[in-house]
Image (cartoon, rainbow, N blue to C red):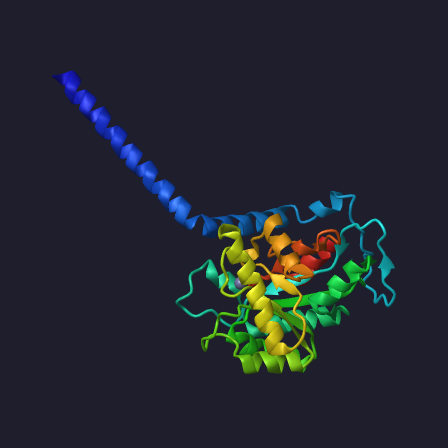
Length: 305
Ligand SMILES: [Zn+2]
């Protein structure tokens, strides 16, 4: 009898373990895209912090000069090596509301911080350019001037218009914004605001898809629709070509990039911790996500060496 009760115990334990494994598997499958994003950005951030100079070991780069100087004539890059062309990625320009959790607080940079970053960059003679200008250099096989930098803002939150735009306008600074064309609530930029920003000549508008899906986890026909519809919407609104896409969560793969190219994008932006651009892979341009307390000058210095 004892053997039977032991057996029952083992059997029960077996079913309990099976149940737990099933629960973990289900949770994993449901939350995998989000987990992938968190893991990937954190791994990239950590590896950047720890191995910030790792690109230096790469022989396939054009080493920038240590001295920051204005170069009117860009150099040629016949071998198509990676070039230093920093793109900063911001999300909210605001103080995070109390309801925001610690992880999401990383997506908030307050207006004073943005202004101090701009002042520091200006004091070091950085020139602010649109992302399309960097793409122009890369497409033409040129090394961009050493002192250029692009500021990008994702998602089209209204706080861009309320908090960032007055500063960018005051300093007469170019920036690029990536919009979700399916976001029409008061929280997001209105069509009038987008038109005003575009007409100013200081803001370049790009696509951030229709409603920010995990592109790597949806069927191809939905990817096509997300990339194409957002492009069409913005082109109709602005009456000009929209040729740069910023992948939601920075998630992309070769198939998505092929679709992006097919529907007419010249370049695609990822979200990672790197300032180096590969002219042979314009569909995977690097951006550094700006954390609320980031020391941008230090990062630029570190990466430039
Ligand atoms: Zn986004």
